[in-house]
Image 1 (cartoon, one colour):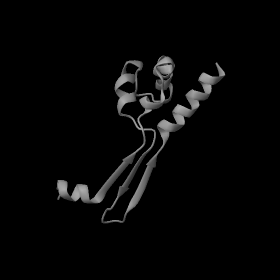
Image 2: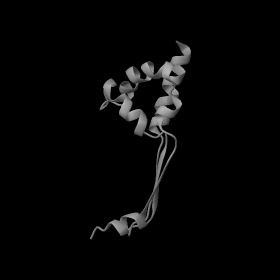
Image 3: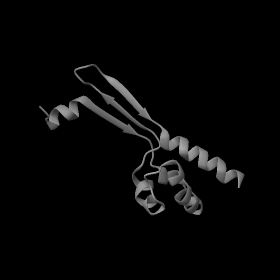
Length: 90
């Protein structure tokens, strides 16, 4: 049975800075237009909300009855590094 107390006792979540903290105002337009190439469910007009909320890296530590596990998601960091390299090459 789900309870919030059990949820908080079995899940720990960490995240790095948001995507928006690293993207300067001067380059925001480039990232806004090109990020959806790598994240197909995103539109350019979603950028402001996304950049304020999305983390470069998110790590989840979960304790379940089947056993504990750690999940690391660094996809946003990989997209950022790719677009930053493209911006530097332009």
